[in-house]
Each structure stands twice: as C-alpha cells, then as structure tokens.
Image (cartoon, rainbow, N blue to C red; front, side):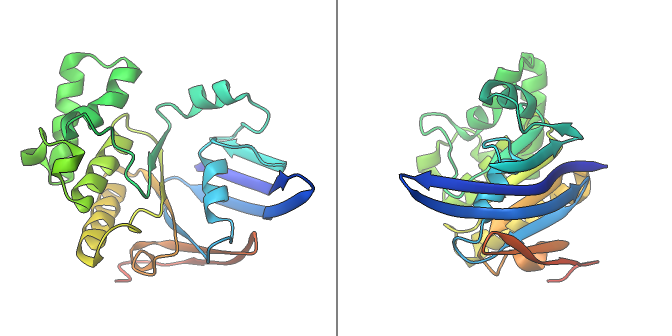
Length: 232
C-alpha cells in the first residue's frame, strides 16, 4: 500500500522578487512499512519534502497524496484534521513541553484524540517501556538527557498509532551513542509495528539504519537505493 506520494511536486518560496526553488518536480512514493532516509546537503530540499509529506505545507505545483487522497488543495485546517492520528512527527530540537513529565508529553496526543483514562494509561506505559524510559516517566525534559528527550519524542509520535512517522534531523543534537540508540529504537519499532518511517538527515550515522536511501540534490531526486537486511 502506498502511504504518501509526491507527484511532480515543486515548491517555490518568494521573498519580494527573489524566488528560491526548494523542490523541482519531485516524484517520490513511500510504501507501507518502509524505513527511508532522505539525504542530501543543506538546501537540497529534504525538509521541504518532509513538510509536504506531513501536510504542513502545500506544493507550488504538483500533487501530494496521503493514502491515495489528494491533499494538495485542502485548507490548513482540513490538512490538520487529516494528519491527526495518521502522521507522527519527530523534530531535531525534541519539541517537548517543558512543564510536562515524560508521561504527560506522551499522553498529550492521546488526550487530544479523545482516548479515555484507561486507554491512555496502558498506551503510555507500553510506549515508555518500548523506548526504555519506564523509570523516567515522572521526569521533565530539563531532568533528562538529549537522548532521553528524543526517545520521549519518538514515543509521543507513536502514541496515536499513526501509519507514518516523519523525523527531521532526529540525531542532529545527539552525541554518537545517543544517536545510535535513538536510531536503533526507531528501526526496532518500524520492524515490530510496521509503522512507516521517513527520516530527513545530513547525518551519515543515520544511513546504515535505513532500508532505502533517497538522495536529494538541488531540489531533485538524484539517487534512490534499496537495501536488504542489516547494513550496519
């Protein structure tokens, strides 16, 4: 099953009379269960492609299909409704709510989705165990390491059981060991749950974990390689 598809997608940003062509006719299909790395230098279009996949932005031309539905012409509110419960996000700077504990940060999307107390408690406990942070449930972000915060962010992204996780530079602010641990957790969860993962990164440490590596260069797909088995 195709989860997300970019069809001849372009994205042009205009500042006054200056135009920046972030994407130039990108065609990209992501299928159910993939673990894909979007790679390329700064300015290659990785983050822009991720924003289109996440229905956070619309292409200047071309189409974006989420589970076969064309989301290109939808309003921002309708795109938000569509992605709620369907897409989870992991950000470079964690984006946790400072005043909430690890438990509460993971619980928040479940509250917003209307899950009852029993459902929330069971799901948060399951996710804390999955990312190895059961004993840190009551800790706030300022009481955790960067690696622990990112693991909470991964758990939060998975809370509503989305079909697609989009991670933007998930290891950029982590040291080698913490970066490795986060990638191992995401790969394991991909394999165990079948959730599709797409990571935009310029970090070469991420590439060995991917089963597919799509290279963007100057806003175009320059290379697209599939891998089988463990490449680490």
